[in-house]
Image (cartoon, rainbow, N blue to C red):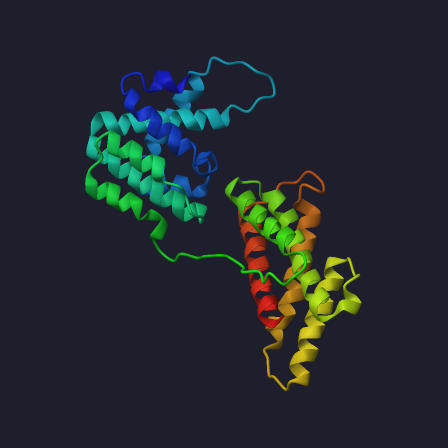
Length: 282
């Protein structure tokens, strides 16, 4: 069933639906978080009914094709229609709560500009617009970044890998994230060895590079008589080994398995942690 047909009586809702879909909400709609959201707000029965309705109304026949994402899209459109036709204010509350839950699940910044504009056009109350506009600020906001010194030789390539690593998570290409995380660590360790241990800069194996960097940091601390938490420095090799193994199993460069979102985010966060540590010591 076409979305236009679902919104035939309320066509002004279609732009909002399209912009919500532009957030790539399908993965969220099949998540445990969304199921709990429906239960918590007492409309899990409606969701299940509309999902069944979308399946029954499907007139497309194609062998070996999964129509489930389309059923979820249609069910969500039906749900929007239901809320709007029964209680307009409840509809706006639903959109606000949905966006809040989606943001909590997503864990990344989400662009709400077009959605806020859509809500304003269809008469959303100002207090709800205000609440939606602050969704990205709810709870703890983590900012991940690495400021790379201009003096390191491979800075441009390394910055590109870091940006692509972040973008791959936003684009939900989690397996690709593993490849970029691996490349970022490789670039960081190369930068360290080129500057501080040039005799070892010809090493190419990531795990070997991690051990060389870790050992050099430990030796440097010992020479300066600096006490340090050994477990923290050992994380350089521990995290690197974990990312290397995950990359070998899940990345686009290897096999056909797909990495999960949590694994991609963990790899990204580990790269930032190791990167900040190394850069502070270079």
